Image 1 (cartoon, rainbow, N blue to C red):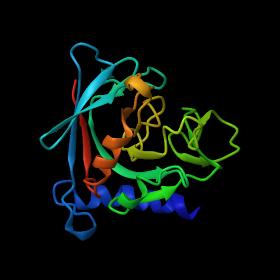
Image 2: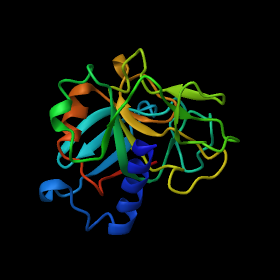
Image 3: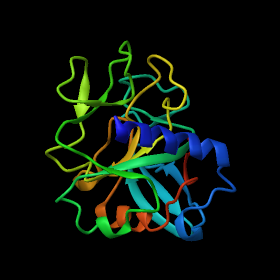
Image 4: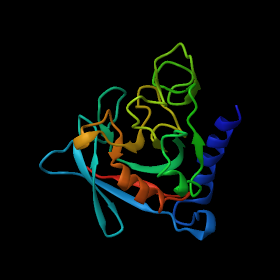
Length: 204
């Protein structure tokens, strides 16, 4: 599939050019987003973008350096931002800031496989799909803008976790299943800074 090949090319390009030297379109310097849990509630965090400290949601199990499928924890790691998806017709306020990262439309048949024994584990799949998966066109609109982070993607290991995204948060920054989630306003700000080579650094 053409869109899938484009995503894999984006992933390879990130590693080939290196994070420090990579440049986005128009010479945009890639951003580094640093995420730390809040001491008062480690299921929520603070995301730092330059001098800005922005609230975010983390996994229901907080963070871990030993991520496993289904544990509800956000991996402590350096996570390159590989590519993203946007939902047509539901992300008008985010659409003008596409283009600095490889972004694809999330069609009605787009899913993401989370079955660790499946050959497409932690990969986008076309729906309907027989193995366990989630739909990328979510009714709750959390994936109106969804950025794929390189956890267990470029190099996959069974059971090490899947679908680690930077996406939109639920009201009150309710915990995620292991992703990092931000409000819509913060996502808009983030998209204005991200480019190929950008990275999310999750601290413990």
